[in-house]
Image (cartoon, rainbow over all chains, first blue to last red; front, top):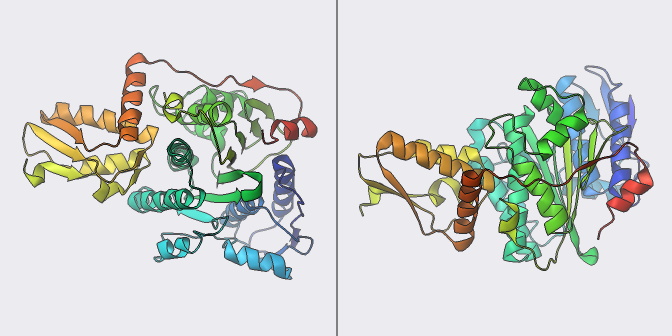
Length: 291
Length: 119
């Protein structure tokens, strides 16, 4: 069976989500143990967020129903880029001992490869070390102010920590792309796990819809304890109000665009974030947003 | 102060303390020698996340009660100090300020793209 990857010609985020949905619809029809050809023949250019999501989605469907994936007839421009960003499996620090050296090769580039980190408890130190190094590379490449660097580190740590604590899956996904001429950069973080709604259900908390669950999360309602749950609301405030950036999140069928949320036609197997942040911010005070 | 009463956070967490789990691991490795004081040395640590700072304060309190020991933090960069004190204050006040979220009914692609246009 062939699954066609649609071409997205621009970096508009909602359009990319529609294409990811299209990909999910196709691959969900594939059967266990089937040979599946991922067809990139229509693609001349891919955006990192799009390809990160495809990696996470492929991993989800391949985990649940073992398929034999093939990537035939890749256009050469796309093939080179996909190799560089390590599509579809990503750079896995638990499987690749020279990960630090590999990551250092990207220090002069405007992107990082797909980073696929383990979420299991036994990898605490490795994961911390891996994500610290990612922060270091971002700092080296972008030269953000101290306040912006704190924000970047904070956002990556809070969202990845949520994957570890709540998603119920073995791995999380992360990449970063710097649009130098547009003066912004995208941090893309994904997991193919329970979703926010699923995490509440897993902990015996029932909301009427996926949107209601995301609203609860944005109001700081934790599945763990009343003192927790600050990660998502503080992150949204920090991005939208503090940094004047954009946050887009899809968790199952709940879609958050900055501070607006709705039940979406887009339904994805997991939780997918894009944080679009300016490279220069004036008047931003990090500590104001972590209260 | 004897070296075995001081623990370097950098040796376990590196330059960034990014999760509750790494804080728990840090505390699993410190050992009270029935002293009146233990020190966590944050030299070379450049960042601590809010979640990690929250876990640090929770674990500090539990550790001090269980071991009748004072646990001190030293060599904190100013941004770490600020994070820890901000989290401590929020724990005391129990005030939560959340973003104002609007639930909308329709999914209009043009509206969504406009919303997400970079400002």
